[in-house]
Length: 221
Image (cartoon, rainbow, N blue to C red; front, top):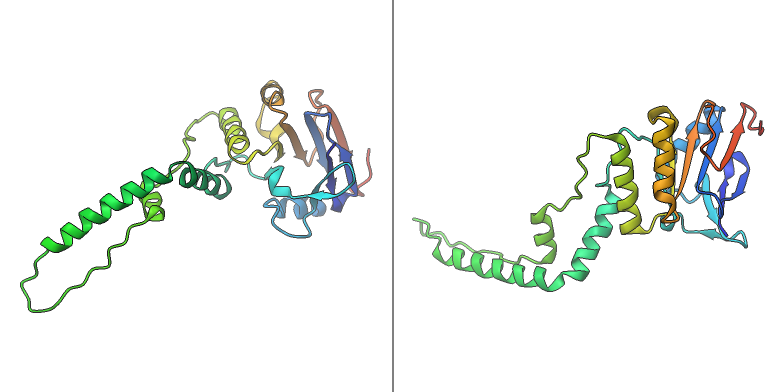
């Protein structure tokens, strides 16, 4: 059992058996505070994930908060860091052999370089696995012009690389048609992925498992 807690709203909801959750926050000041902390890096994060004993779990192991759908990028620092760690772990032999070959080529190149001058030249030749990774300029393919495909791709990549199963978005309903959002929820529920949408205005919709509307005074309507 997992619970979603948002301290600034005094919310603590059981999300174990729901696939989708719509949270409408009409108080602009509180909404701004929550969105400002969307990187979830602060110790006093407004969002928490609790276990059945109300013990706080490590947010980065469970949650991704996307505050700007337009700027959604699968090549986020979080995803790329995990991808590179996996490559270095799973393909270490290839990286090592490649770096050794490049070092040999560079050493041979250095021997052949001649300068028409009495000055002495020294070389510092040491290419390692990290240098190979940098030279490869590794990135994730994410070039679809279709917004719903980009969102699905981001979810799939973040789930595959980091095991993220709770995705909090801001303004999904403002950017997607209801049938698109319904498809997004249905497509990802089979991996146990939960979609949480935060909005600042009410929408007439019936596709969410759970809906909570908070007025200007942070009271549930």
